Amino acid sequence: MVSKFGFLLLFGCIGCVLLFFIFVERNLRQTPRTNLHFQTAYEMINRSSGDIRILIESSCNATFLIWIITSYAGDPSARSALRRAYMDQELQTLGIERVFLLGKLNDDAEKRTHVSQGALLDESRRFNDILQGDFLDTYRNLTYKHLMGLRWAMNNCKHVKYIMKMDDDIVVNIYGILKMLRSGIIEKDSLAGYIMKNLVPVREPANKWYVSKMEYADNIYPDFVSGWLYITNSQVANQLINYAESSHIYFWIDDVFVTGILRKGVNVKIQDIGKIYTTDYRYLECCIKGKINLLKCEFLIGPNGGDTELQVKFKEFAKFCHTNCSIRAENNLVGKTCVVAYKERYLHKGAFQINSIKIL
Ligand SMILES: *[C@@H]1O[C@H](CO)[C@@H](O)[C@H](O)[C@H]1NC(C)=O
Ligand SMILES: *[C@@H]1O[C@H](CO)[C@@H](O)[C@H](O)[C@H]1NC(C)=O
Ligand SMILES: *[C@@H]1O[C@H](CO)[C@@H](O)[C@H](O)[C@H]1NC(C)=O
Ligand SMILES: *[C@H]1O[C@H](CO)[C@@H](O)[C@H](O)[C@H]1NC(C)=O
Image 1 (spheres, protein in one colour):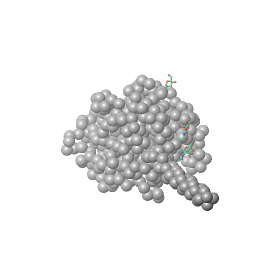
Image 2 (cartoon, rainbow, N blue to C red):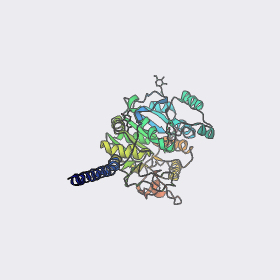
Image 3 (tube, rainbow, N blue to C red):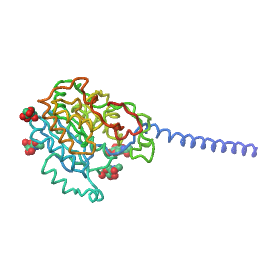
């Protein structure tokens, strides 16, 4: 009898131990699965763009368009060129206000660039066109900068019709942009720009633009518009910002995140205005040469190719030709007649791997 009871006890114990192991094992297996589920695509962070403290603020008087420009705090040269190209007074008469979006520099960066916080405060007092957020001015914080600009524009520029976001190394013909906006071809409540389709994350760890699976798990980015320059309005900015804050997601490549991931999340349309972009600064130089023949240029936007003064030269051409030149004939477009030695260029910094759409 005793041995029979002992047997039962033994079996019971073995059963308990087995059950315990099964339970533990299932838990072990389940925990990571749940985590993976929550990390589907993007890094979860606990710092939303709404928490960003503004160190230097600016007022908004724009009535038609607020022009926000991401700029590296440590390099004022592009800001200076833009200020000389398009003077405040002229912008004001056009209903435009321009604001540069900066982060802050750490001691190392201040030493390297010889730009101190004091110098930035002076710059702001002098030009009243700086918005500086309380985050380090680095590549991986670009998304903070971008969202800070949209949030500020949305809260402070209540009466503007458009928000235009640009990078400071991009050359632009403002007169041409205004003409396009007034023509009404930009769809309401959309993001209009150069559409990037089917781009894939860079997965080589040595690359500066390396994106880990933790940061972004999918193998392809949603369609987005290049951060070079895009146009939208306050309603769209509002939706993007709210979604960024409620979803607690973050991805550091700013244009992919804001105009791709967030945009898709709130179901905003993107509109292709890629025809007015060139990816090669030398085409802008060809545009400028057309001035002697009184010819306009089909390109309104392009990179400065490392020469900040191209902004000033292109603006002079654009202003002169806006009233004095004629539109080029189809067979005389700069894209067809300008001869430059072939060199691959990229519209998007994080996209080195990809053969993006060829537009030239
Ligand atoms: C905006 O308006 C305020 C008050 O009218 C003025 O002090 C400020 O200089 C203006 N800023 C710009 C950039 O025009
Ligand atoms: C972004 O800014 C925050 C706040 O200044 C800083 O702590 C962080 O190191 C920055 N991130 C990167 C990747 O530079
Ligand atoms: C148009 O051309 C005339 C004559 O060359 C010149 O005086 C005028 O300044 C030009 N217009 C602009 C906006 O540059
Ligand atoms: C992040 O912080 C907020 C409070 O600001 C809190 O409600 C939330 O649970 C935190 N999320 C994570 C993932 O830690």
